[in-house]
Length: 114
Length: 110
Image 1 (cartoon, rainbow over the protein chains, first blue to last red):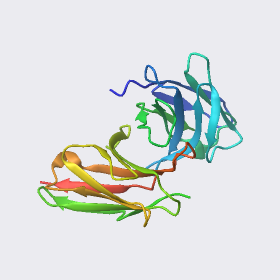
Image 2: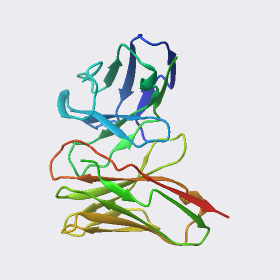
Image 3: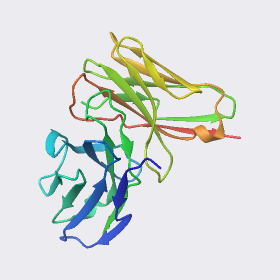
């Protein structure tokens, strides 16, 4: 158990809908990262937050948005969902968001868009 | 730019050795290695820092060539539990895009 929690574990929804994925980092970690992993693919970096501020942005679609709240939990919002958005979404946390930080991954949310 | 890993897949028998390589087009300050078992979250294995410091796993070792911007992961006397997909994540000195390689799938058979 990494100490990172993600909810929900599974999400099934229809095209065009909007969903919110939630992540609580390890106690004391200030940075949160979001990744998308499509079936048997690598980890695609979406976005990173540090202490409430956006720190780095990857290949995140305009239909997707995220934020980190004062209590350090983070939410990833996916809207106008398409079939291709079906994937495992991982959240990871690290102490300081630096390049030498170890990232601790949550168990993931499996999103299925029908 | 995404780091390049090779090989894409490896099949071994228990007790055999394997090497997984990771190359980056950018200057590196550190390299992280993670292992992901099917359907599970990636788990940290090891970090190699510029200057040679290495932290991580007991039975798996790695090297980091700063000049060549490459890292290699050495799995010696493979065990069944080593099966999974290995990802490298080269990092610059500061925070930035957290980019991982495409992964190398290792299958260890009895």
